[in-house]
Length: 281
Length: 119
Image (cartoon, rainbow over all chains, first blue to last red; front, side, top):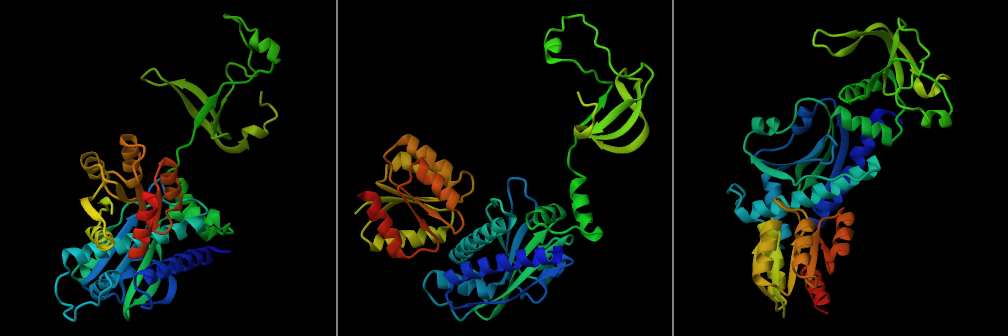
C-alpha cells in the first residue's frame, strides 16, 4: 500500500462512519458522494454553500490533526428538525434558534465521535477527541478561514437533504506518520519526507562516552571507594558521542568559558548501533 | 414514577430526555449542563435516577459519576454515550453506573433504562 491508498482507506472508513451517524439522525436523507485526497486543505470548502455550519474537533492524548464537518445552514436546520421528530419550517432564511444550534452541536458531537472511532480502527489505537466546536459562518471567506491552509487532507462528500456537505480529515505530517506505520505503507523517497519532518521534533538522548572497562560482576560489586578503574582509552584519545544508542560522532572533551564540560566534534556520522558494538560492557 | 436529574451539555438533549421522561410519567426535578453542576445538583436534590452525558465541558461524565458514587454508593446513574465510546461506557459501569443508552436514542429506550435502574 502506498500513502495515497492509505489516505483513501482513512477517508473511506471515516466516510462510512459519518454516513451511518448522520443516517441515524436523519434516516433516508444521507447519500455518500465520494472521497478524495486534497493536496491543500483550503480546497475543502469548494461547493459548500454559505451560510454554513462548521464543526471542528481536535484529538487529545498527543495525536495531531483533527476533523471538520461543513454543512449548509439549510441542511443543518432540517437535521435539527429531524432529530426532534419534526419537519423544518419553509422559512429557511431565519436565524437558527438556540435550540436548533444546540441540536446541531449535539449532532456534530455524535458524528465526530463516530468518525474518531473509525479513525482509531484505521490507526489501530484508541483516538480520543476534545468536545467539538460548532460555529456558523456567513460568508465564503469566513468558511475558507475555518480551514487550515497547510497540510494534506482527505474529504468525504455527502448529500444531506439534497444539499452538499463535506467531512474533512486534516492530515498533518505527524498524523501521516502514524497512518503509514499502522497501514505498513512502503516508504519511497517522496513519502519519507513527511515522516522525516515529523521526526524533527522528537527529543533524543545524547551522551558522551569517555571509555569502557570490562570486569566480572563479582569484581564490580566489590569495588571499594577510592578504587581506580582503568578505561580502554588513552588520556588524549577522542571520545565518542551517541544519539539514542547510535554512535553519532567522535570529539574532544573541552571546558567552556562558563566552566562546563563540552565535546568538540571532530568526525560525524559513523552510525554504529551501540547494542551491536563488540566493546559494549 | 421516579424523580430524575438530567445532565447533558446540550440543551436540545436535555429537552429530548426530559420530554421522554415526562411522557413516561417521571418527574424531572433538575437539570445540569456540565459535570461540576451535576455533582452540585445531585448533592442538593438527591434524585432517584440521574441521566448523565459522558462528553461535557468543565468536568466530563465519568469524573462526575465518580464523585456522585462517592456521595452515594447506591446512586442510580444512567450514562448517555455517543457511538464509539464503548471503553468509557465500560469504565462507567465499573465505577457504578446502572445502565447506559447510546445516542441517538428513542424515548422507549430512555424509559426502559430508568425502569431497569429502579428495579
